[in-house]
Length: 361
Image: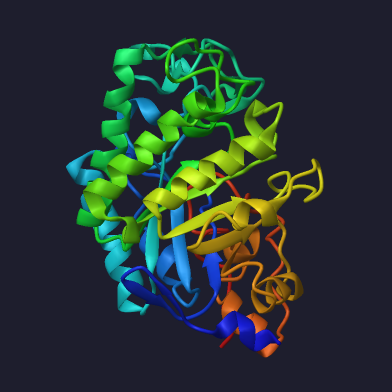
């Protein structure tokens, strides 16, 4: 049965060696200028045996940042930094996408140009925190509602960032449409109280997501464009009164654009998978492309998901941080590395806990 995880998969214009993916993992280790750290070349290339690496969430613009030391892909220097990473991964035979994000209201004036307010669908502060060096964990700032005429510019930021990612050598991009960030915040009635064409009905609230996806597909092709969704995860104060029809509409419309995969976080990100009722199978039936699942999958769960046809790919988060050769460990039934007790999973500057988790000899 384990063999199900190790069947190749055609993903658009590339072939994946196996059905395992490295989930996008914010490590808060970007260098000055929000460049990927020099060590990122080692970090990602060490993990190139996984079928697909989805690199960490990366800002589409200067105003998209919400956390300390997170990379961007909107300056020539950032593009050049990422090119080193993609070259290193490809040299090992790996495949790598870049996750593109705009944090929206999950931000602080500290991270915004001129200390301005972060932008959001509506001027509703999130019950969430971010981290500022020297201040520690702080409440997110009260955001400013985007004016209707500004939205096209933000859509264009995603389009440009996608083009930049391809220039940097990525095999494709994944739009971050999850976890309360800007795309997800537009979707949900808990964070979107607009009365213009981007608010109110399900169709209106989904408009921004679909415009972003259409722009990126037009720029780099549907076969290099993907999206991540988290239908019932409440992280970052994300809430929706009726998620089933919302996400059925979203996926029905995505089917028309036919992104190369849809990446679904099942349940509460990093927590219980059954925190809220949701019929994932009903949503999956609306989409004919590659379906990737995530959230707390063990080897056994992943094998079952692939073997049963419930999913085409399974992404792994923390196990990919601590065990660079996770596919080999699964294949050979070897134990995984334990997290280092003296190194954080997020943040830090040196190599410890970033590039020094061991692989099998």
